[in-house]
Amino acid sequence: MSEVSSSEAVGGEAADRAVRAERWRALASRHALLPLRLFLGITFVYAALDKLSDAHFLAGAGDQASFVSQTRAAKDGGSPIAFLLGPALDHPTLSALAIAFGELAVGLGTLLGLWGRVAALGGALINLSLWLTVSWNVSPYYLGNDLGYLMAWTPLLLAGTPDLSVDGYLARRAGRDRERGLAEDHVKRRALVDGGIAAVAIGGAGLLTGSLTRTFGWGRQAAAPVQSAPVPSAAPVPSGTAPAPTVAAASVPVGGSAQVKDPATGDAVYIVQPKAGQYCAFSSVCTHSGCAVDAPKNGQFYCPCHGSRFDAATGAVVNGPAVKPLPRYGVGKDGDKLTLGPLQS
Ligand code: FES
Image 1 (cartoon, protein in one colour):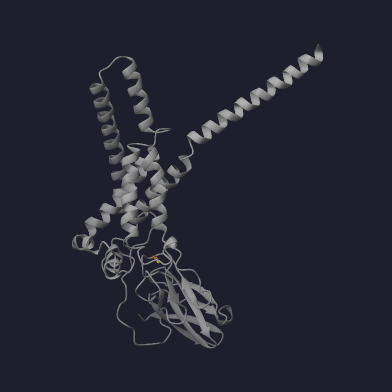
Image 2: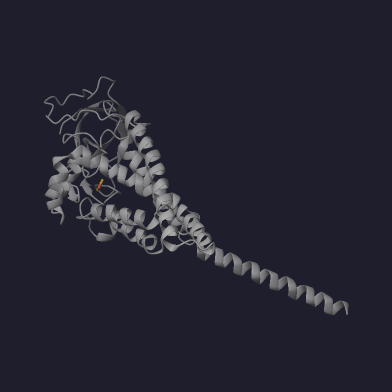
């Protein structure tokens, strides 16, 4: 008898484990899109606040990282929606702010699951327009991250945000209203009005956050004026008033680099030695959309954002979407020390 009881107990435990495992599997399937939703929502909120706090993005045409410069580069670079970029360039500040606040709305809607399909459609349209502009010339195509983001929005566009979301709460409440026998018109109107109130509240909070970010530029530097005229002297004069950065010549081997900071802008600058005894320096700020290029490898700088490549000896564009070379600095050599010179182009 006791053997039978014990085998029954073992069988019962196994059945419990199977039920628990099945429950976990069902829960995992139900929330399969949650990591993607969190990633996209957080990324869009971050990208929006980053743009709003970045004085470069909202600066004028003289700043290579500005919305104007990026949009012009896309227009001149053969974007298939170039005809839409003219109006955006006519009102650059308004367009740049619309993009940033659009990203914020999409990010918050996605994170909170409020009108999730609408938010996903907004995100997909933003990434579609970025793919057709800033990422259009990226080769091969799969290095353009905007295409990847566009694809990532598709599951959310199809499935919406029914769980752990405002949409889910409103849907459950609508179900209860129907069970109570409320008219369908009334149920739908109530869901729409409450969704609208939530959207206005969340939109207001987003607008306030974005405006505060824009006003105080949390953690970001103001755009420094870009020196566009060549500086005649090749002497090691810094481009700001702070002392010019120096490095030991031994730390810049042939084909290698050392990183210093432009004292005027705080941007990283690579001092390189492409050939023995030939030193030069280039800004790390990619001329496409302002990302930081990697340290040179195999004679080229690589920008991880959209795949531009620049010649490490001249700063010239090897592979787009960037169309302008990296800004170049002078380098002075005194004994075993290299000193960053002025911005030359
Ligand atoms: S920022 Fe787009 S390629 Fe560098």
